[in-house]
Length: 327
Ligand SMILES: Cc1cc2nc3c(=O)[nH]c(=O)nc-3n(C[C@H](O)[C@H](O)[C@H](O)COP(=O)(O)OP(=O)(O)OC[C@H]3O[C@@H](n4cnc5c(N)ncnc54)[C@H](O)[C@@H]3O)c2cc1C
Image 1: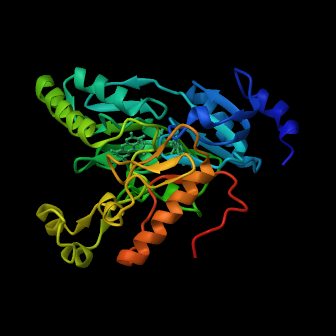
Image 2: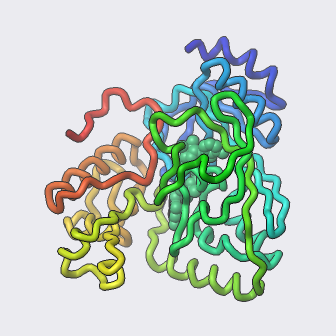
């Protein structure tokens, strides 16, 4: 792809100036990642839609980045037009309209102030609404999918409004995480929220926040790196698993990693947090390759110990050619 040649037609669609070779580490919470072939920050929904249609229709690889809190970007970067979504307009009500670049926590605060309940679980989830939709973000037994009424998007070059079923949501999953997904930009959504007492909403959120502070490390991370394992047979054969988890048939990935003695294990600057074994943290000098090698090591050890293939919650993106894969 001749990226220099694309600058001119792209610039004609943009209010601001697209850039070449923008380093992405400053846009990810893991603080790693090489350059974007092309980079542009959009704050206007019509511009976001226009650029998405143009990229899809002209075969230009497009990657949407929100807060970068659920991605591991390769050290070689992303050979695509990386569109940084800062479209943040909202209109609050029982049927709340929100553009997908709004920070998830900010959306919670605005809705809570208006006495609307539903987004309490978003407290402490650092991403945008768009990223939350792609991975069906959730916590404390609630997910974003539960609140969704409809989505405005551009998919395969066509702007459309679709129902939630279009996303094929599952636990920390949607069709947009799959390799065969059509190129799609999520523009805006409508969410159904419930009126409730403001104090009660904020009280619930404060309790969630308190639990997070106790459990989560403060170093740079991408949150839980692996998905929890839903496997009743496995849950029943783990003697120390807390009873409620055994009854629900859920084994936290962190439990398996900790049981393998991997807390504190490090490769280069990437390290398994001592506070929470499912958080891989940056000790300050990590590369994306360090994180990838650490993740593969964990996958191997957990498989050899428990026969479980961990699934990643954090998405690996960009050019990973040359990295050895786990067999
Ligand atoms: C400390 C910490 C705690 C966390 N806790 C939780 C938690 O409790 N529960 C949970 O579910 N997650 C948690 N996360 C993970 C993460 O915050 C969420 O998955 C978040 O919703 C990701 O949003 P983002 O804007 O950062 O997405 P990004 O990382 O920027 O992107 C993630 C994916 O979504 C795509 N994407 C983003 N926006 C759009 C769009 N508008 N259109 C199309 N595609 C898009 C990207 O291309 C990428 O593939 C945590 C992360 C951290 C660092």
